[in-house]
Image (cartoon, rainbow, N blue to C red; front, side, top):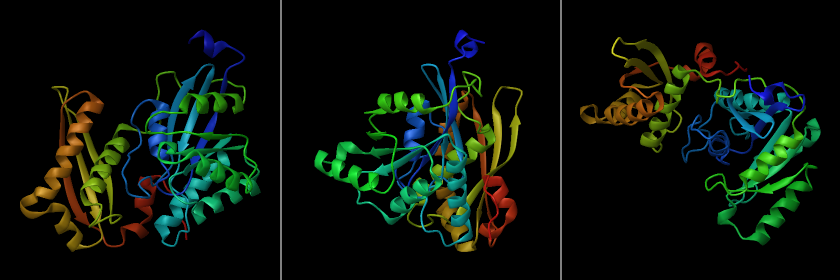
Amino acid sequence: MSDIDRNDNTRCGFVALVGAPNAGKSTLLNALVGSKIAIVTHKVQTTRSRLIGVAIHDNAQMVFVDTPGIFSAKKRLERAMVAAAWDGANDADVVVLLVDASRKIEDSTIQIAVGLRERKKKSILVLNKIDLVKRDSLLALSKELNDLCSFEETLMISAKTGNGLDDLRDILTSLLPVGPWLYPEDQLTDVTERMLASEITREKFFLRFHEELPYAATIETERWKDLKDGSVRIEQVIYVERDSQKKIIIGKGGQGLKTIGKMAREELEELLGRRVHLFIFVKVRKGWSDDKERYQNMGLDWVK
């Protein structure tokens, strides 16, 4: 254990990243942690469950909770995702409301700001993608949101370029409670390798089929076997609800599935630092989005 771990002045706490879908929460999490632990695509609602990322700054250990986007949910899966997001915010020491400054304020963002005010959560406002917006627009956006909720601080950043992230780390460190660190210094996330493998394949699925099948599938790693030569055999299943969806994924001559597999395998090999034998199967499971077991595997609570 290092000297800083024994120091009575160490700080540690949970920081929830909340916002409307596609505000850039996963991109920000990866930037703050310094490693890719959350998948990132241009599709909204890529994050389905809460994801923990751990970062150290000065004497503080920040435990970030990346949450699904908050919006007016209608379907069961959507309601479960929004519930997970609010649970993450309720349990956090500090909440970061991340807003895409390049877009007009969405109703969901207004609802989040009001919700934070009603919950009396210690919150800071972070305007993201400032490289795409004029300063006058940023100031107007900041005022409008601060009129809805009394934020501790307001920052303007670009999660993609890293602009403003040092200031964000400094402010978060000052707001966290004094206490011992919860995770070892070298731990970046609580996500298991099996779950991360599923997430990586799901990212490639979104990238490949974002127009045809935006939210029609869930992906699970069913088998993980370490081999004697140091490589690993990973077997995954893509669950869809209809035969027509299965045909689209597999593609002519199996090309669609091969493309996903190649992209996922290459990233997994880089991540794990060893050879990966990846086998992906597609199965039809009608109504999987109403299957309690699927929710448990995704880390979501079953909601009515």
